[in-house]
Image (cartoon, rainbow, N blue to C red; front, side):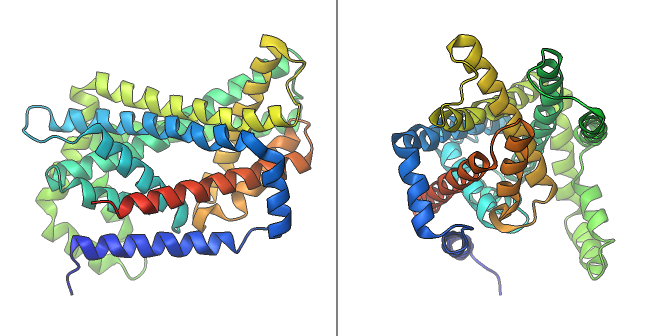
Length: 345
């Protein structure tokens, strides 16, 4: 049976709604405790949820930069609003489905291929997914030096254990930079399909897929390599925007720290230090969550990451629990928005 795009759209919608319902009934706190946390957040919930309008806009700008580079010189065109809509919906599916970070990509390719060629849609989605993860590594890498700078002025602790962990993360990021550099120069789709063939039971599928789609896979790899080779301006602009979105995301935690009266003494210096702490909390939590990213909505992983990262900065575990719960509520709200956008014509 060959599925139509509308049937696939309906399937993605059902999966997203089901995951959202599961999430609502799998909170680690009772609904009474959840309500108390929401009441504590009060009007701060508005900027906490609202800042993601900006974050998703920056993400869409980054992706649109890649799309425009891929379609330059053709009569293909995708409006920014459509890219913005697919950005929100794609991330909603990523949050809601297993192997977090991959669930929304097939949907984005399917929808974007309505506006541009299938190869351009596929390559732009793959390139944006690569850029999204590439920016993560740069965010984690730069956060190490932010931590060291704050430790140098006595604001944060530093010891052998912490230094060792930071060193491991540095090596981890450097290895990732090398892998990404090869992928951007040579493409990685064909190699990925070949790698899938080493998984038990998938060797035959991998071989058949390579044979039947050899030309298309080769063309997609060429387009991936072409972005870095032929349009470095678009490449670095997209990367910078994705990095910027992580920085903006840190304001979400900043709002919650300020809600608890944590401002490092107040004033410009105090707020700046608090923002840097927020950035480190987001950095450590996303690193932890992405290392164990196969769970739907990273159930329990994100919460643990927030508690550990906040405790590492000398703050209370109760604050970590509050931050994780409010972030989870924000995710559910935006998943619901993403699912609603899927039903629009």
